[in-house]
Amino acid sequence: MNALTATIAGIGFWTDGLPDWDAARAFARDGTRPDNAPARPSPQLLAPNERRRAPGSVAVALEVAMAACRDAGIAPETLPSVFASTHGDLGITDYMCDTLSTDPTAISPTKFHNSVHNAAAGYWTIGAHCTEATTALSAYDATFAQGLLEAMMQLATGTPAVLLVAYDTASAGLLGTVTHSEGLLGAALVLVRDGDGPRISASLRDGADLESPGPLGTHAERNAMAQMLPLFDALATGGSRAVLRAGPHRSLSLEIADAQSQAEPAHG
Image (cartoon, rainbow, N blue to C red; front, side, top):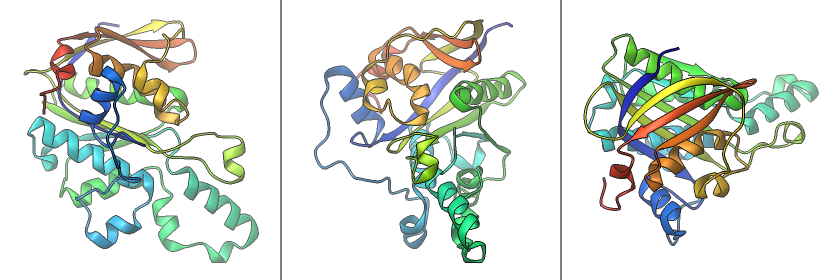
């Protein structure tokens, strides 16, 4: 296939101990971490009561989505979006399975509401007053690569800008014995067809060999969405390429031009 291209206009990032993209870049550069990092994202898009009740999957997705839109200087309600998560909210899924097997009539309506895979996308479109199209997808350990391909194909077919949001949560209970994931991890990109910023060119390749993880990949390696971190390590350190798992025996090779513009401490 011909290479797909996009410019990264904005970035959002959140994981345990690194609560924004500036903190992530500093950690990738020299290992520094912020003092008193919050234990959980606090997305201002939600009203205070909803913010407290929102599951971690929704909180981290909305936090990074808003951060990427601010970084790009683009109004969130104008952007079509792609939400990518390997498992959705594993804690809620484990609760649903356990309750259905023991006392089905005791299912919490709120947890049922938040158990669907597109819950974060739904909160986003309501909170941002966005009526543009949104997509929620999962492809196991190729989820981020497939989400990135979906966003870049939307650009290639005429959409001027797309928001890509990727996130996963910690596993819990019996489900956690077969599907392991730790902590919260989320990142978002506002991708545009033209403009200033790192320029990525993506091509599918045969083979599934990956490079050794960088600082961010090592920091959050136990989260299911660590699959996206080769790209963010490259952006944080001014790297020129990254390879992502794209499916069985397939990889997505990314060439990155002008990544140094993201690695500069003064950005943002």
